[in-house]
Image 1: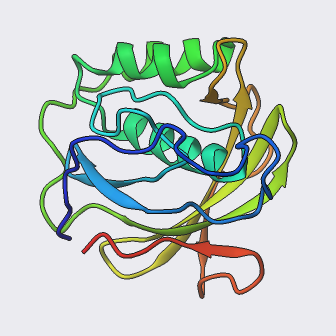
Image 2: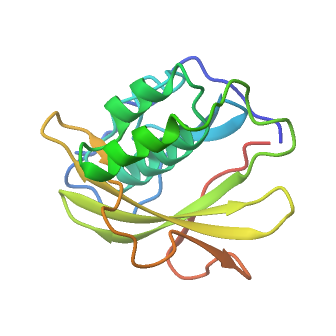
Image 3: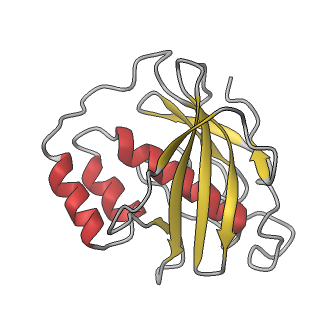
Length: 194
């Protein structure tokens, strides 16, 4: 999967008020950056500094929430050992689940990017639920074996004024589900990173 690294993107140059726009409107001017071998979308709705290890600066709207969920989920999954403290500290909401993840993450070591051709490709997302303080997103990806998955993610609007991934304190259902097809209802596609 080919990916393009961008110098900077996003951060709120939208002509409409980010907080009053339609939460289900798709992101605009989508570009892609590569982090540890995985392509991550960026857009006018954020982040402000797309290629950063732990980028911040998402708009307070549905597209900003979805982009934050996608970025944080990927970054915490593949961050190198020396980057994981910054990723967790900046992109994941503080709670016991984040602390547990940090402790368990020390049991494995990631020092190299995902090998070429082995990274999943983000196809788009479904904004399952949205309020001004919380959004639930299903991230739709194509895996290297061409199977489709949906990864459930929740982001919350922080006191610092940005979206943060909220790890669940208890897992009652699988966060990743296998799909037989890309959803047709409420699916917001992202342009290909190829």
